[in-house]
Length: 263
Image 1 (cartoon, one colour):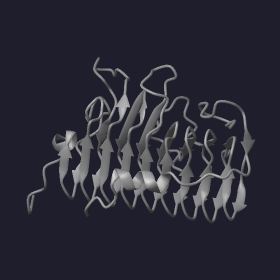
Image 2 (tube, rainbow, N blue to C red):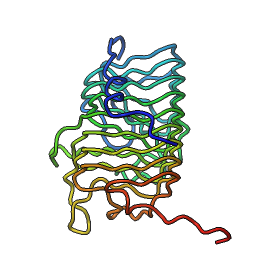
Image 3 (tube, helix red, strand yellow):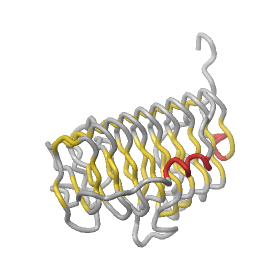
Image 4 (spheres, one colour):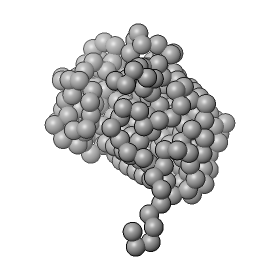
């Protein structure tokens, strides 16, 4: 499957939106938002978050249309809760989205006692987000993120993990800068493009630790260009990626060889 969306088109898709109208302090787990906020749950046609908000363990948030994070807002759903979005999740400039929870999370202290069942019927579209934590979700569309992050710094120490998700479309992350970024153990129905991202963490091996791209199953292409450090398995403990299309750029060496017939 070809990569059907260019970086320029992604910017057009995510640059449009933002009208605020409503709204973290998680009951357990690490601090995601900068300050305490509003506990949210229930069912809505469309829902906009304009401050800090969280979905507590055991609660459900259902949005039949779009879930919108206004610029500078924060949604902490990194808990054993259930979030269902019928259409798109739109993440504004400087906003934080934490969605999903799995046992594989290494975010200490982890509130994950299992795997959540968070679902996005459309895409996650982010215009210069501060960061996103996407962990164990079903996203029927694409994940498109352009720019953002605190900048190439360890203070504050900000990660951008995309882990253990089922993603029906493409994954495109371009121009994010922070401490660590990685795409690990995802199943992607489209292609993956990672370009111009920067992470400054030094890992257990004493080498630059970011841009870890490991153990993904990708139906389309895997393209990695101008990332710092270059895309790598690193110390993730992961394996080479399985790619149905072509692996290009920095990711050309991060692909498992095809299986031989009968092998």
